[in-house]
Image (tube, rainbow, N blue to C red):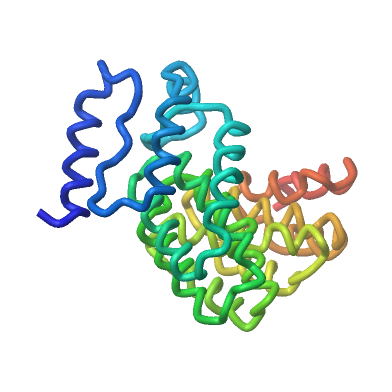
Amino acid sequence: MPPSSMLRARIERQRDTNAVLLIPLPPVHLHMDTVVEAIRQEFAAHADPEIREKGQRFFKEEVRCYGMKTATGIAIAKKYWKEVKAREKQEIFSLCEELYSSGMMEEAFVVSEWAPRLAGRYESGDIAVFRHWIETYITNWATCDGLCNHAVGDFIVRYPEHIEELKRWTQSENRWMRRAAAVSLVVPARRGEFLSDALGIADLLLTDTDDLVQKGYGWLLKEASRKHTDEVFSYVMANKRVMPRTALRYAIELMPKNLKAEAMKKDW
């Protein structure tokens, strides 16, 4: 049985016994890198069943996690970054893939910490790596935003020609690809960048029926409104008849009360 199949079998067995399992067992990999093994051992040592149970309420879908405070997970990720940062980028990408393959949320957050630290080494073709990760491993809004806000966003700032790739993602059947198209621009939009592209992505997602996609592009519009209030307000007013109320509320969240009231009016 290949390693990936062994891992899936281990995951299924573990899921079936979650009722009595207090600490998730680190996934089994053949030829596991020692850094990945050490990270998993530390995560298992910090696992807290109470935190794991409380964390589930933030998600509609099942989320597999060790259960620990976010600050603890980030500290562990930073600790082991010091051990891997001198490696070749492709080797670090392979470590990220190995971490993602476990399906454990904290391991995905390690990738979210490490990938942006490679920004100075990004190459144009790396968009294929990010696309693969989102299509294959992203299964909830937290891991989507964790990767896209910084790693993918930093990539787009360096290679803006790939904004067309984000626009193609809006047409994916995968809800996380569609959300990724929007949330990858959140940070640059906050700085006032990519306004026309942000509005273009909102156009492409405008009538999406998935609430997490609606929240994603609504969030993008909200961040764009920090520097471009008038433009985003005009966009909302022009589209509010068809824009889902979830997206609209996110988009106008930072606007003055009078503009919010105008945008919320059902005057048709």
